[in-house]
Structures are given as C-alpha cells and as structure tokens.
Image (cartoon, rainbow, N blue to C red):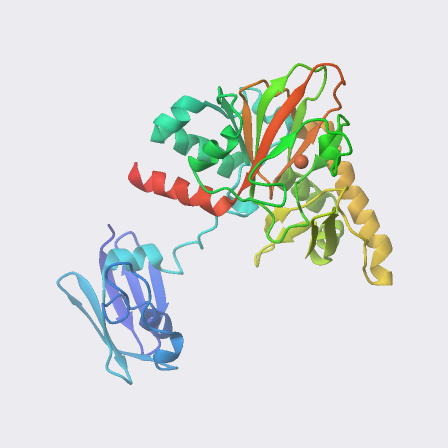
Length: 375
Ligand SMILES: [Fe+2]
C-alpha cells in the first residue's frame, strides 16, 4: 500500500506524488476510460461495460478530492464522477508500471550449452501432479528457460495427453490428438525415420503455430537417438549482436512454410524471427524441411540468403546446445516458439518409441498465474 502524499491537477492531467516520492501523471481520457464504478465496470467480473465511443472525446478533469481514502474525480462535460482506490491507481499507473509481458525475450533467462552444469530443470511427475508448488516451479521453468523435463511419467499409451490436462489443453492437429515418433514404412515426415534431424521448431506451417510440444519416451533401446535442445531466443540475440542487418532481414522479410500430404495442405506466411512493438523477440521459427519456395523482391534475395545462412550457422554451434538421452518414462515439455529441438540418428537395431502432442502457451501461462495467485 502506498499513500498519496499530495495531488494536483489541471483540466487535462492529474499528478499524484506518492509517499515513496514516485509520481503518477495520468491524463483525463485514461482516467475516464479506466473508471472503476459499477456503471463503467461489471462489479462481479471487472469487465468494461462502456465502449470508447460511449464516453466524451475530450473529457476534462473538473474537480479532484480525497474522500474516505478514495480519490474522487469529477469530469466535464458530462459531470461523470469516478472514485479510485489509490492502490489500484498505483498498481496500474502507466508512468510507474511496465506492460505485462511474459512472452518476449525481455523477461526470459536465455541459455547456452554450459548453462545447466547443475542439472537440467527436472521434476518428478507424481510430485508435479500432487503438489501445486512443484507444478508452479515446473511451469515457471518453461516460462524462464523454455523447457522442463518430467521424470517417471507412466509409460502408457496416450499418457502424454494426461500430462497436458495438468496445466492446459490439447492442441489436436492433422496428426491426431497425439502422434507416434518411431520408424515407419513410407513415412510422410522425416521425423518417422531413424535419420538424424537438425535443430528445428515444429509445424511453422500452422497459423497459429502450436505453442508447446511434449515428447514422452516410452522405449529407448537403440544406440544413438540423443535429444538436443537449443534456445532460439539466444540464437536470435547472437545474430543481432553479430550483425544487426541480418537480424533485421530475418525479422522484416516474411516467408512461406508448407506441409503437404494426401490429407493436408498447410501454409503460413511468417518471419524466421518475430518481434513485438519494442523490437523484442517473441517467436522464432526454423525448419529446413518445411520452408516453402522463397519468394522475395529480387534485390532482397542475396542479402536474405546471407542472413539466413548466418542464422543457420549459429543454430549449428554445438556450444549453444544441450544434449541428453531421453530414457523411458521421461518427458520433455518445451516452448515451440522458442526452443529448437533436434535428434541424433539412431541405429535400426533395438527400438525407439516416443509419443508427442501439442498444446498452447496461453493455457500454461494461465495455470502458472493461477498457481502464483493461490500461493
Ligand atoms: Fe520435431
């Protein structure tokens, strides 16, 4: 709680000096729009009842007073009266607070291959299910590092869907609610062979792309087949540091991705590196198997390829990668808009069987915030 030391206003702006000496400067139109009174907001759910066109175009502050600890503002020309809880104003003031942002690189812990010498973020599945604190910590690891490992997940068919139910919702696709990753005869995707797969993000041809992927190991008795993870936000940061023009080329020029088989034809138009209004990275994409025909202005082709090669070379740097072998019962859950994954080739002898599924980030972040509020 922060008390108001004093306040002043003119017709356009209210200035509050708080007890901690910080200042809020709040304009009349913002105050009018953020009115918390029952006529403006539903008291049960806090949702706005008024459209912006329902309030005057240029409201003015007429009078301000402090009554019973609440700041009362009267507006012209309509005589509207708003009462604000000072705590609400302090916590929501746009000159004191950052915008909520749990998606961009700004609030992430970027990592490289030697970042996990104390061990990968890893939680026991039974504790993850039973204890809110463990679930919160594991989901926070996905928010911070982009991935988490769960141990001792029962090796049962479709169990990956039950894991998703712990924090979100299944994102069903043309591969079904979940998919099998093992060697197939006549595969429609190289993932279903024993070949190694380079670092990639899944399904960039979907719009929107699935925000989360889970891979659950049911069997692993082959030689090889190690998993590799890599932080795509770190790779994008390195690209920007090494050559800002290459970074700009890949964030400003959008390309097509495509997947086609007998039953599906999925296409998207998106950039390799997606940034927000502040220029911060929010999503990366890379999947050499599903880049469609590159169609860019003639003058852009050569510089685009130079940037594309540079980005791909960064993604091949082994010092950025963490390598481990998934054992039966282990499951990796990762942010498919940030973390690239790869697989080393494995021998045809023995068997390797994973089940994978997709989910979305909004459900995971919602669960995380709910767990934070409850604790
Ligand atoms: Fe994949």
